[in-house]
Length: 207
Image 1 (cartoon, rainbow, N blue to C red):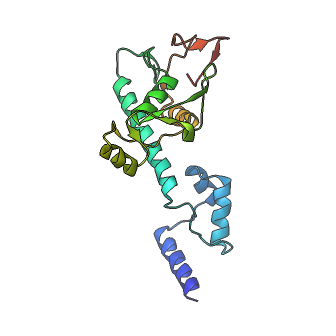
Image 2 (image 1 turned 30 degrees about the vertical axis):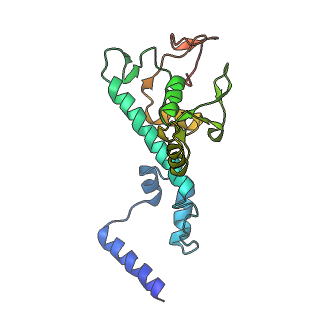
Image 3 (image 1 turned 45 degrees about the horizontal axis):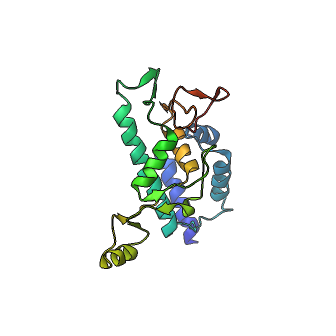
């Protein structure tokens, strides 16, 4: 069949490209491909599995979430670049600690406000936030361009259309995994950011 002929042609091209055999397991380990992906690959090679189109590809909501994460990465990268060589930061090996005025929580809240949202807290003592969908718009910001145009026509105060933001858990994951050597000094008491330990002396990566 044409499909089998195409597979044979692809195998021939691969054989010509590589003059020697390679160990599949070693290849997967070398490129950090997990056992699940290896199993799927073997099923496909054996003809037991066909490639399907991912059902979420191109969906508007998924694109907006990706845009928000990229926006967050750009913001954190700017913070990193600003302080990586700053004399205000304490250093230990490759790690550097941001000035006492900057914590992860206050940076997250400021990032949300710059995009038009007030991050509502459900538990101030433990720093718990409401769902992003329950965040409130700041004065002058609107959800859509249509709402913005209507506000302008009615003579109301207009700043612009609010940008999408991500939950604090996503923010923390991005900071801790993509900027692990950018540390904060932790929070002690209300509104204070002193030392890397607080309360019982346990480390707090979320401050």
